[in-house]
Length: 395
Ligand SMILES: NC(=O)c1ccc[n+]([C@@H]2O[C@H](COP(=O)([O-])OP(=O)(O)OC[C@H]3O[C@@H](n4cnc5c(N)ncnc54)[C@H](O)[C@@H]3O)[C@@H](O)[C@H]2O)c1
Image (cartoon, rainbow, N blue to C red):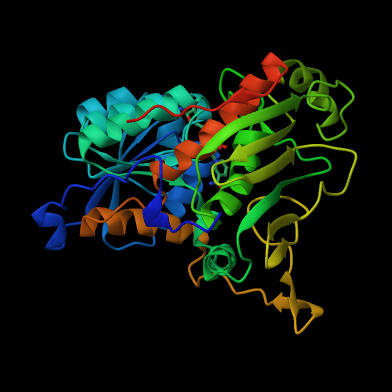
C-alpha cells in the first residue's frame, strides 16, 4: 500500500471547527476549566499558567475539597470550585474550553457534556474505554461544531514527526508489516491509589495507559488506515498477584484485589491496504523489552528503539535499513531535541491555537477513534477467544 497522507483519511472527514469568537480574536483571555484535579491536572495547570492569554476560571473534582486544594496549590485564588463536571458546566456559561483530566471511565461523559454546552474539549488519553463511547464523543463533537482534541503529547515530539516524514517520503516504499508496543519490567502505575488499575475508574489498563501511544506512533505515520480484523489477547498475571514486588509491601493485598484491568495485551491486526500490525504492551513482564518498533517496507525498513519505561518517546537514534548500489546499508537518523517548551506545553498550546484561529483539532478524533477501535477489538477478541472484524460506525 502506498502511504496515505493525513488528508486522505478513508474513514471520516475531520470536522471544521466553528470560527473563534470575535473577542477572542481581538485579545480576550481564553476562559478555561479543568475537570478532574488529580495527577495529570497538575501538568495541565503548570503549562496553562505559562500562557498569558489563558485564565483558569473553574475546577471540578468528585472528591470533596480536592478542587479547592488544587486551587490553593496553584494559587488560583479566583477559580470557582465544583463537585462534578455537570456542576461546573451548568454554572460556567462563558467557558471557551475545558481540559478533561478525569480517569478513563468518565472521559466520554465529561467530554460529551462539555461539547453539548458548546465548550471546546482537550480530553486526556486514552480517548475513552470503549469504541461506542468514542463514537458518541465524535458525534457530540460534530454536532457542536467545537473542537475535541485528545491528549497525545508524543505527537509534538520532533522524533515522532520524523517517523511520519520518513514514511511519507516514500523512502521505505510500500509498508507491509509493522511491529510496535513496548513495556516495563515492573511498572504498574499506582502513584495515587487504584485509579489506573480498577475497572470502575480505568476500564482499560496497559493498553489505555501506554499502548495507545505505541499505536498512535505508527498509525499516525502511515495515515491511520482502517483496521479490518483483530486477534487479541490480554492478561493480568502480575497485577492480580498478591506477591507482585512492584507494589509497595503494605499495599500488595489491596492493589492485587483492586486490579481488574489488563497488565499485558497483544494484538494481530489486519489494516486496509494489506498491512499487518503486530502489537504488544506490558505494564509488567519478566523481560527487559518486548522489542523495538519496526516499520517494514518494500524498499526499506525503519527501526525505532524502544524505551525502558515506555511513554511514547524514542529510545535512541532510529535506523533505516535499505539497499544502495547492490549493497545493504544502514542510515542513522540522529535524535532531535524536544521543543523548547516541552511536548506537554505544545499539546495544550496547539489546542488553544486551534480555538483562536478556528483551525482543526491538533489530535483529531477521526484518527484516535481508530486507535480506540483497535483497543476495543483486542478486548472483544480476547474475550471471544477468536479473531473478530472491526467495524467503526459512520458519524
Ligand atoms: N498525557 C499523559 O502523559 C498522562 C499522564 C498521566 C495520566 N494521563 C491520563 O489522565 C487521566 C487522569 O489520570 P490521573 O493520573 O490524573 O488520575 P487521578 O485518579 O489522579 O485523577 C482523576 C481525577 O478525576 C476526578 N473525576 C473523575 N470523574 C470526574 C467527574 N465526572 N467530574 C469531576 N472530577 C472527576 C477524580 O475524582 C480524580 O480526582 C487518565 O485518563 C490518564 O490516562 C495522561
